[in-house]
Image (cartoon, rainbow, N blue to C red):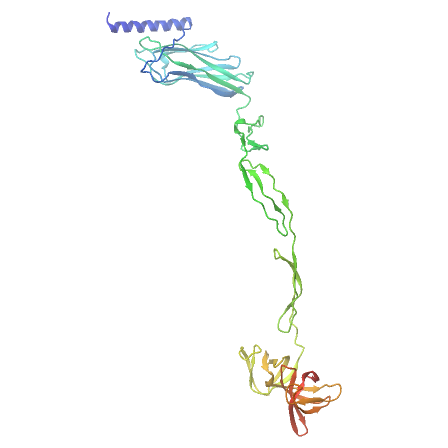
Length: 421
């Protein structure tokens, strides 16, 4: 018999063996042989794992990786029938439906998967072999349940046993498949998320982590507002690790604002109070109006001159004075007069203005001297009530006067304190 016929006979025998195994339900263990030097990866058939709640519907996938080439395959899937109910099965993509034998009843102790190719070649596909759809029983305990995978036979087209590994899966039945709440819960050392569902709200252990401390800057106290000491908080959940303490407001540091006397030339201010630190006005100063001019003395311009804005010939000229024009003296500033002229106010030298005065000695006569001072010789003397014409003023308190004495004019200086204007 040639080699081709021998190979065909072996294939037919293998097919008959698988059919007999399928019909009889006999379990045959798969011997594990040492890998040849050409095999670099281990073939694995594995069941997936799931976390579920009571009453959930879910799927377990049995897949294959690193397939070295399989012609016939049989494996069993075991599970706890008190917790899980197998409701449906769907063949995967590794073996075609025509090459697969699936059990007609799904309530057997174990689910048995059987596949053999109708062609004389090995299947080297990887991926999903079968999908098992379950429902979790309402009475299932909260614990993991093993999805066992037991490969009873795996051969290639040459009827040679294939070495592979079977990995079990697991179904964990839990009270709740947690979904993180967006809010954080915390204690003194850690923070975490609770489950968002109202009927659960359990701490989700995998989200627990230690606080990440960041500084909270201190706030300085002011005169009127309280401040805060420095503190620390968690940058993730906001938990305050070190609480800030209130620092009382300092209160104002009061200083006095001195009063300013009003004059005829400037306004004044009442006294006040303010804070030395923040500058807040505690007692506002009030403006005192300029003092009115008490003097309203009628006079005349004696010579052509200029009226100035200030007591200086270098200041701005307010007006030009015309001799014999009437003016009103409102203030005397030593050798300068402050006058009103043509509705304007300005300064003029005292030698340019003349006006009347009266001697007001208490006893005796008032002497007229040749100069502004007692050291100068006496020219004459006049009794109380004598009329004089003032033609000048000095800074020393003496008026330059002119007195009509019979048929002549006497010109000299009299002490200003004995002359009534």
